[in-house]
Structure formats: structure tokens, C-alpha cells
Image 1 (cartoon, each protein chain N blue to C red):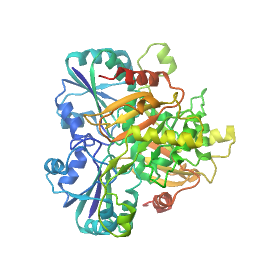
Image 2 (cartoon, rainbow over the protein chains, first blue to last red):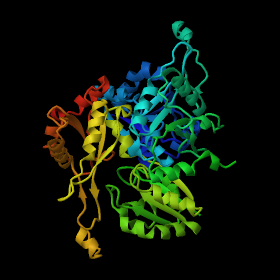
Image 3 (cartoon, each protein chain N blue to C red):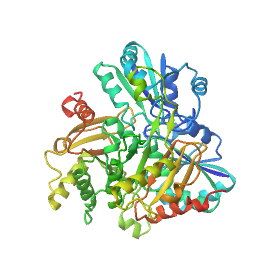
Image 4 (tube, chains in turn orange, red):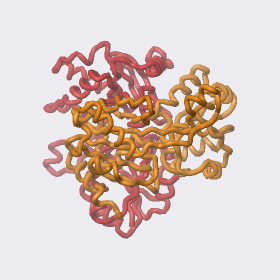
Length: 274
Length: 274
């Protein structure tokens, strides 16, 4: 039959499109992917709004049981729900390829994602360079490749969207080795964490890009009622107390256009409601 | 009161979010912006679905009457509908700044846009460089700055999303000079036009980037029932007959990742349904 891959948007149960909701309503089985991002409502609320029972799918399940989902889609209508847009992250490209190889029809219902919603901060999407991901440092592993990408963007006068790490249902190396399904508590990188890590990178690589003059914009829970957009120098942004994650960070191009400047000033931490 | 700026998504009346539709339903006045993009359904269909009378707004109206719309929003609930995401293009940043200066509350309802929906072609959004716009050549004005931007992206092994020109309700210079509100027929740049113009740029600047080896992906009416995604070398893509606009063009990075390669092959023109 068919596999519907449906974006839920960024906030709550009402951020789905009418088309997406109608497809869920006529589906036989509904899965909700919970390992690349999170919504700000519980599964129960989704079930009530969409009038369907929903099965949560974590990373292990998706990897181990992807074929099961696809086999179901051979003779049922299966919806696979993804927070944001289903194809902005790389994770779900694989399931679509696998479905096509099995001659299963795939229908994709797009939605907003952090990549388009950041337009709200006033920086022009035409002035962004490559997007970077900032992963959590581990004790023995402190990757800094995003620092070089930010360097290139700054040199070309581009903004950089930094997507901050999310760890959901991760296992320790020990537990993986012992094949124990014991999961660590979820962690969501904050603006504060990310700027700390960038300062570490600066300390190591010394290209003089993360300094007291570097401007950034903290993007908090964009597209939700708790949204915050706060601009300023990175060193001050590092010490502000924000609403809870999800957080994303924009590092601004050295030179802003006029409208960008107006937005930057509008959202400046000096103008925050106390 | 409040100005709702609501994204409609890319296809038809059902691509709006539930939240967006509810806000329209409780609005006193509803405007539809028709000059930066188009939907594939008529205003009548929107009016019937959203159960509201809708006033179309062209560029002249928005520029001349922006204050009128904002003054209305002082004591009414006003919805301003925009195709795609309201803030992916730069056009609507200005109206928001103006509203904030007048202390009018603004609520933004995001939606998908070409910038996030292109994830569907399989190229990873992390591997894109700067987005470029390709404007129509005029008799006396043939800008080529996008060619240099594409050059930089290719050198860094980035994909380039090329947004193709849309001319809606444009006037000739003569008619503007004579202050005559006579509008030219709408024009939407095709993949074929855009590659012709890129070859002209290549002919002028000779950086050897638009050649028989340059790979691209034609994106046609993405997010609609008439969607096409067709990959191949640019010189062949130039001569294919596509579904009607809207068209966008991706110029691929020289080296593709494994999953990107699989998608490129999946959508290759050799595999098009005849």
C-alpha cells in the first residue's frame, strides 16, 4: 500500500498540516519517531487529536525493525511521524530508499523545520553558509571540525546555523558492550554548553573567531509558545539563563545588512523583558 | 490587536497547519500575498476551505497600503497569508518590524518552504552552501553574480540551491514612467531558462564550472501532486520538458556522499517514467 512520512512541525499537536492529519486518520498503523527531535506535547495529546493509537519508535527500534515497518506498508497504510520536516535531517533518507527498493509507495508531507523557521530571527536565509552540528564533547573525544566550518562562513561573511546535540535513549559504551538496554537520561545541549565548547575550540585552534566581538543569536524552542530569540555577543549569551531546550545557535556574519541590524537590535539581550 | 503572519505551505489549501487554519477562522480580515510565490489552487478554494473572504495583495498594494493593514491590526485580528514559510524570503521582514514599532502583536505560523522541502531530493541539507537567486536577464541588464557564488560553493564541495525568478504583476519601465498600472503577463523562470543563463555566464566568465560534467537536479512543483525531481548533467537537463513552474534548480557538489549518490541515481532522467 503506502508509507506516509509526515512532518509534525516544531511545537505541538496543531502544527501538523491538514493534509498530514487526514493521512494519519486514514492510516492503519501510526509510528512516531522520537530520537532525532522532540515535540512539546505528549504522545497522549497526539493520540487524542489524531484519534489514533500511536507507537513510539526509538533509534534501536527503527534500525532493527525498519524492515518490519516496511513489510507492514506493503499491505497497509502506515504513517511514520517525524518532528519538524521529515527530510531536513539525514536520518530518514534511508528508510525511503529502502521502501522504494521494495516498491512501496512513499508519500512525504513536509512541514516547517528549524532550517526554515530561523528566518524569524531576521537574518536573511540567503546569507547563511554551511549548517554545522555541534556534538557533545565526551571525555576522550572532543571533535572540533565545526569550528573550521564556522571559520570559513565568517570569512565569507555568512551566518552559521549551529544545530546542538540531542541525546535521547543513548547507552553507555559499557552497556552496549554488555548488550544491556539501559538508557542514559536524555540530554539536550544548551546555548551555554555550545558556547563553552566553541571557546574550547578557540583555545585549541586560535583562529581568533570566537572572541568578545563575535555576535550570535540564541534560538530557544522556536515555533512554540515558549520561544525566545536573544541576540548579543557570544560571551554574554554564554551566561544568560534561557527557557529549557531545544536550543539552536546562530553565529552572525561579521557585517549585517540594514534589516538584519534592526532585527539584531530588536532581539538584543539589553531589550529582554525582565 | 494582532497580526497573524501565516505560511500556507507549497501546494494547496490543505498544506496549512491546523493552528494556522484556526487563526484564520477567528480573524476579522484576511489578506493573501500573491507576489513572491503562488499556490496551485485559486483564492476561491482557500475561501471555501477557510470559510473567510480573502483579499489578494499585490506588491504595489503591500508597499502602498502596508500602514493601512497595520492600522487595521491595531483593533482587529488580521491574518496575512504567505505561500511557503512567511519568513524564508526577505520580503516580509519589513512588515514585522513596522508592526513591532507600532506595538502591534505579531504571531508567526511557520510552514514548509522550498528551502526545507528540497531535502526530498536526497542531497543533505548540511552540504549546501549559500543559496542563490537567478533573476531573468533583461535586454540591457544581465547580472551574473550568482555564477561566482556557485563557483565558491562548487570549490567547497557544496550543493547550490538556485531559486528561479518569478515576475508577477510587473510593469514595463515605460508604464512605470507613465504611471500606468498596466501589468505584464506573469512569468516563471524554468529550469531550461536558468541553465541557458548559466551557460551565458560560463561563456562570459569562463571558470569552467558549467560544463558537460556539471550535475544538477531539477525540482518541479515540490510538495504538490505534480512534483517532479529529475537529476542528471546540466546540459541534458536543459533540454528536458518538465511540468509547469514553479521550478528550482540544484547544482550538485562535485563529490556526492553514498546516500546522495543513491538518490541521484534514483531520480536520474534515464529512469523517468516515459
